[in-house]
Length: 326
Image (cartoon, rainbow, N blue to C red):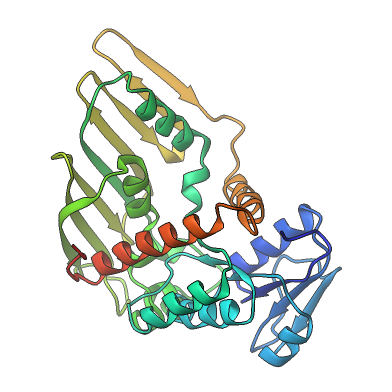
């Protein structure tokens, strides 16, 4: 159990770190510490109730109960291990790592700590994704047969205040690349299909004119248990942005248009439109944070941690073109 008075450690103070800090303050947490190696000015953050530390020793002196890891992907795994080894529940931004180096060390740390490990695939908390999950569970459209997922955005537009070439997302050695950075949609289709992957193929694209050292696009083909097939396309180079997911069933289909906040439930006899007009993207992060603290210390945390570890390993293997475990 993590209370509002417990110390919470945020590792990393970039844009996502600032978002988590603001959401912690909004949720009533006031004992917040930010671990940064460089104490640079924040962009959009009031520092009332926030303490800045620049060393692990100073962070541990505050006895944090939980940590949120918001650094470049290449740092996630070792920082997660460090947090677990020092008795913290961990919410780590996706993906959990850019490779499987030291994975066994992570497994040991998680097992010996008894703490919660949660990976920040916040799209699971989108109200229209939750609605799709409900429709699939009820079975009104029959059996799922196939799907197509597409997410393309122009990387230089993400953070206009910085040079995209210096961002972690553009640099292979920092764990960047479209596959890993946009892996939300890999997690999303796995979450909705909810069956083991039998086989997959990944084809990475390096043809764009963007100055990135990692893949700027990728296509994934899947076959799941039961014969369900699917295609996920991810890219950094598409203008204007385009993001949708189509799920095809025996008796109709679901069409999710993220940028419009629309879900179309299409049947032969009619078409139903479900909207999320009041939805704000930050709701994904606040819902994720609430869920994380609800799970921390609960009787479900071990099961959730083991599931998150397994699901993350699958995504990391796919993004590195590695065979899946049998």
